Image (cartoon, rainbow, N blue to C red):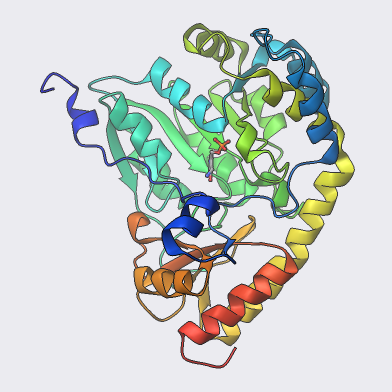
Length: 370
Ligand code: PMP
């Protein structure tokens, strides 16, 4: 397989958290909680579940490959022309499609250290390079967060995409709207700025950018969103991109004809219409996240500021060891060594009971009484 491109040869595959069922089997534990993949602890909207059940009766037919109804719903939600919306099999699909239309040998992407790993995989998969922008200092107000100035400085003549995760996974940190805007002002128009807003629903209103308005001013901006987090549909795999119509047109040329299945289309449309479920989910997160942070700090942890549905913390011990010890307690979190944070754990905000159980287990792991 020597002819496989050098970028792919150099890749290490993305390793998602294992499903709970697999871990139950592997560990022989019955009572496991999983706070490892930033999923909504309330699950999907009941309206989405009902819509899926109904859509299943049409399951012998191919889905609507244009995603007409969901795009109409999103167009009215965002007040945007549906020709500027591209649907994806998760927002991940859109990140890959952007790579396909823009990258190749001799080109590169710019991304921040400790940023969402998929960006790098997209680049290497297309035999493109990665130019890493240094993150903010560990003792800054936004430890390990994106640094807008560093990101802008890494752009060179061969850069085709600059990725921003806002808020970022796995740090939970975010850039101020002013910092992103200054980045958009500085980056040449030939570089696509991909603003990945997978967790934006959790942001406080004063820190959440009006990315929709920016789309009118910056034709090189692509905003990606997902139904996987606050909408509770991670298993359905549906996300979308908002962009200039010309970019949507190019994405549309390379995507699979039926990249979003009919159950996902129905689920997303129903979820978008269930504002109450979204509000419940976000309100829970916004109450539980400070409590989880305080609990970790009480155990001596150094917790990164987060506006997402997870927190990342240095608990004063090796992250992989902490992960293994928590696993033996039946609590699954994510160690962050793969992200260059060998002492950090990422913990998804769960239900109140799950968060308490995690904190008690963490206390035992650290040798304190829970
Ligand atoms: N962007 C970020 C920052 C993420 O954390 C994730 C999920 N881990 C995604 C994109 C992709 O999510 P999905 O494909 O489920 O939409």
